[in-house]
Length: 345
Image (cartoon, rainbow, N blue to C red):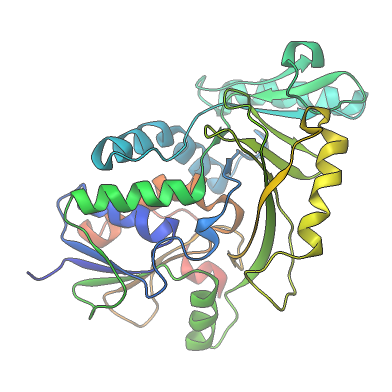
C-alpha cells in the first residue's frame, strides 16, 4: 500500500507528527535505524514549562497553545496504545531571591491573566503554602504557575509508538521513502541540513541528567539554581540538565552529571538522602533561531523539516505536529514567524 508520508526520525517530533497525520487518516511509516527515542527524546527529565508571560511574541503564543493542547493529546495517545506517557499538569515552583523579584513576579502574574486566557495562573505564594517538596527561597516566597506539566520522555515516546502501531503506523529500521518525506532527524539532521544548504542552521547541545529514588508523584516540578527538578509518577525524581556546546562523547554521562546533585540538594532539602539510580546524557537539536524549525526543505519538493526542539521539544510537540500535518496534507501554512526553515538561513 502506497504511503502518504514517510517520517525520517523516531524522536518526539517525528512520532508526534506521525500521530497528527494518522489521526487525520493518512498512511504513514516512521523510519529510524537506531529505533524510537534513541537520541535526546529518550531522556528522563520531561519539564514542560512555559516562557514568562510578558513581551509576548509568536513563539510564546505557539508554546502556550501547545501546552494547553497537551492534556488531551497525551490522553488520546494513552487511550489508543494503552501505555502511560507519564503526563501530568502538576505546575511548577520557583524561588524568589529578593524584593524586586517578588514585584516582577506579581507584574507577570497580571500579564498571565490576560495572555494565558484565564486557563492557567502565575502567582506568588508563601513557602509555607507550597508544602514540603519545595525549593529554598531567601524571601520565603515562590512563583507558582499552573501551566507547567511533566512527562517522562522515554515513556512518552513508547506510548506514541504503541498508539501508532494500533493505528497501523510502524516504526521501521529502514524503508524506501514514499509520499511526503519529513526529516525529523535531530542534531545530526541539523548538521546534514547545514551541509546541504551551505549554511549553519543549527547545532547539537549536550545535556546530562540524574534520576533519584525520591518519590513525590503528586508534587509540582521545581526550577531552582537553573535546574529542573521533576517528580515522576513512577516514584522517581529527575534532575537536569547541563548545557554543553562542546563535547566528545555525546551519549555518555561524566563529571558534569555528578555536579548536578549537590546543587539540587542545596536548592531542595527534601531531596536529602535520595540515591542516584540512573544517569543520562544526550544531544538536543537547537536551531539557529532557538525555535523549532518547521516547513518545506528549500529546493527539495515534497520534502519537509521538523527539527530543533532543543529543551522545549516535548512541550512544543502537539502544536508542531498539528501545523505540520496542516502543511503536508492540506498545503495550509500556519507556521509562525521565527519557526520557518528560512528564518535560520
